[in-house]
Length: 116
Image 1 (cartoon, rainbow, N blue to C red):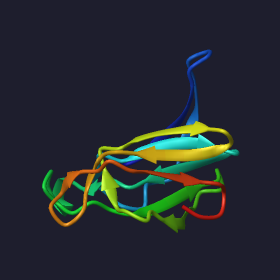
Image 2 (spheres, one colour):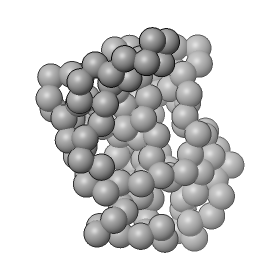
Image 3 (cartoon, one colour):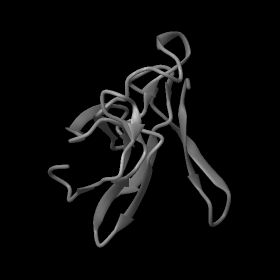
């Protein structure tokens, strides 16, 4: 992905592009808005960097609309193909694939703005 876009579903407007993602070709990740920042969570290398069987990534990046993606935190369990939502003022990342056998994960991690 060469760029990401700030889209408002309520009215369909696109508010410009965000800066280029830190890992070119990342696949099966989550992207979510939390407390005014965009979070890019987990996933796998894709494209020229890997394939669908590559190891999951545990890095969590934030983009605060100033043009920089910053490393924010690390997942306890690197995961790809997970579900992510905001509930009770925390980010929750659940399930997906990970571990040394790239098996189904039956766990959730929550993020309160400081730590996963």
